[in-house]
Length: 119
Image 1: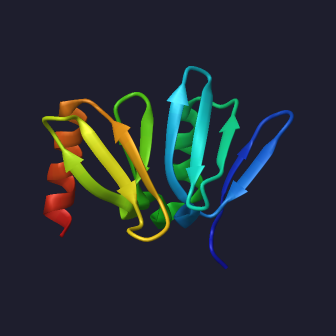
Image 2: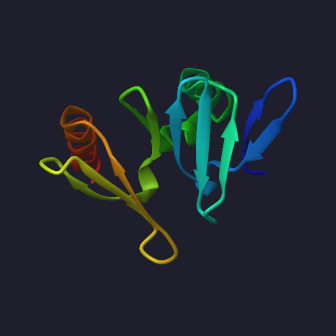
Protein backbone atom coordinates (compact mmCIF):
# COMPACT_ATOMS: atom_id res chain seq x y z
CA UNK A 1 0.00 0.00 0.00
CA UNK A 2 1.41 3.38 -0.97
CA UNK A 3 1.77 6.16 1.54
CA UNK A 4 -0.34 9.30 1.60
CA UNK A 5 0.47 12.77 2.83
CA UNK A 6 -2.20 13.65 5.38
CA UNK A 7 -2.73 17.30 6.22
CA UNK A 8 -5.28 17.78 8.97
CA UNK A 9 -6.59 20.92 10.65
CA UNK A 10 -9.49 21.46 13.03
CA UNK A 11 -11.93 21.76 10.10
CA UNK A 12 -10.39 19.91 7.15
CA UNK A 13 -8.36 16.91 6.08
CA UNK A 14 -6.43 16.40 2.84
CA UNK A 15 -5.09 12.94 2.02
CA UNK A 16 -3.04 12.72 -1.16
CA UNK A 17 -0.48 10.41 -2.74
CA UNK A 18 2.94 12.07 -3.13
CA UNK A 19 3.10 11.32 -6.86
CA UNK A 20 -0.11 13.32 -7.37
CA UNK A 21 1.49 16.51 -6.00
CA UNK A 22 3.21 18.71 -8.59
CA UNK A 23 4.17 21.47 -6.17
CA UNK A 24 3.06 23.23 -3.00
CA UNK A 25 3.19 27.01 -2.82
CA UNK A 26 2.82 29.26 0.19
CA UNK A 27 1.16 32.57 0.91
CA UNK A 28 1.55 33.39 4.59
CA UNK A 29 -0.52 30.98 6.68
CA UNK A 30 -2.01 29.30 3.60
CA UNK A 31 -0.53 26.67 1.32
CA UNK A 32 -1.83 25.63 -2.08
CA UNK A 33 -1.29 22.09 -3.32
CA UNK A 34 -1.19 21.82 -7.13
CA UNK A 35 -2.17 18.32 -8.21
CA UNK A 36 -1.45 16.47 -11.47
CA UNK A 37 -5.14 16.61 -12.40
CA UNK A 38 -5.04 20.43 -12.26
CA UNK A 39 -6.96 20.74 -9.01
CA UNK A 40 -5.60 23.20 -6.47
CA UNK A 41 -6.34 22.55 -2.81
CA UNK A 42 -5.69 25.43 -0.42
CA UNK A 43 -5.17 24.56 3.24
CA UNK A 44 -4.65 26.74 6.30
CA UNK A 45 -1.25 25.27 7.11
CA UNK A 46 2.13 26.98 6.76
CA UNK A 47 4.62 25.53 4.30
CA UNK A 48 7.14 24.70 7.04
CA UNK A 49 4.57 22.51 8.75
CA UNK A 50 3.82 20.71 5.48
CA UNK A 51 7.54 20.15 5.02
CA UNK A 52 7.67 18.55 8.49
CA UNK A 53 4.66 16.35 7.62
CA UNK A 54 6.38 15.21 4.41
CA UNK A 55 9.49 14.24 6.36
CA UNK A 56 7.64 12.41 9.14
CA UNK A 57 4.84 10.73 7.16
CA UNK A 58 6.35 9.75 3.82
CA UNK A 59 9.66 8.16 4.75
CA UNK A 60 11.76 7.57 1.62
CA UNK A 61 8.94 8.89 -0.59
CA UNK A 62 9.57 12.27 1.01
CA UNK A 63 12.81 12.52 -0.98
CA UNK A 64 10.64 13.27 -4.04
CA UNK A 65 10.24 16.80 -2.71
CA UNK A 66 12.64 19.74 -2.74
CA UNK A 67 12.03 22.85 -0.66
CA UNK A 68 13.14 25.94 -2.51
CA UNK A 69 13.09 29.34 -0.92
CA UNK A 70 10.36 30.39 1.48
CA UNK A 71 7.41 29.66 -0.72
CA UNK A 72 7.79 26.45 -2.75
CA UNK A 73 8.06 22.71 -2.32
CA UNK A 74 8.59 20.95 -5.66
CA UNK A 75 8.10 17.35 -6.72
CA UNK A 76 11.42 16.64 -8.41
CA UNK A 77 9.77 14.22 -10.87
CA UNK A 78 7.94 17.10 -12.55
CA UNK A 79 10.81 19.58 -12.85
CA UNK A 80 11.05 19.94 -16.61
CA UNK A 81 12.87 23.20 -17.37
CA UNK A 82 15.00 25.71 -15.47
CA UNK A 83 16.24 29.05 -16.83
CA UNK A 84 18.41 30.94 -14.36
CA UNK A 85 18.53 34.29 -16.17
CA UNK A 86 14.78 34.48 -16.65
CA UNK A 87 14.17 33.00 -13.18
CA UNK A 88 11.79 30.56 -14.85
CA UNK A 89 10.84 27.06 -13.77
CA UNK A 90 8.47 24.79 -15.68
CA UNK A 91 6.83 21.88 -13.91
CA UNK A 92 5.45 19.36 -16.40
CA UNK A 93 4.73 15.71 -17.06
CA UNK A 94 5.35 16.40 -20.79
CA UNK A 95 1.84 15.17 -21.63
CA UNK A 96 -1.09 16.54 -19.61
CA UNK A 97 0.06 19.65 -17.77
CA UNK A 98 2.64 22.41 -17.65
CA UNK A 99 2.97 25.03 -14.89
CA UNK A 100 5.28 28.03 -15.18
CA UNK A 101 6.70 29.27 -11.87
CA UNK A 102 9.26 31.86 -10.93
CA UNK A 103 11.89 31.56 -8.24
CA UNK A 104 15.06 33.34 -7.24
CA UNK A 105 18.23 32.71 -9.24
CA UNK A 106 19.90 31.25 -6.16
CA UNK A 107 17.06 28.81 -5.53
CA UNK A 108 16.97 27.72 -9.18
CA UNK A 109 20.75 27.35 -9.26
CA UNK A 110 20.63 25.05 -6.21
CA UNK A 111 17.89 22.92 -7.80
CA UNK A 112 19.78 22.75 -11.09
CA UNK A 113 23.00 21.65 -9.38
CA UNK A 114 21.15 19.07 -7.28
CA UNK A 115 19.46 17.55 -10.32
CA UNK A 116 22.68 17.54 -12.35
CA UNK A 117 24.33 15.44 -9.65
CA UNK A 118 21.49 12.92 -9.62
CA UNK A 119 21.19 12.23 -13.34
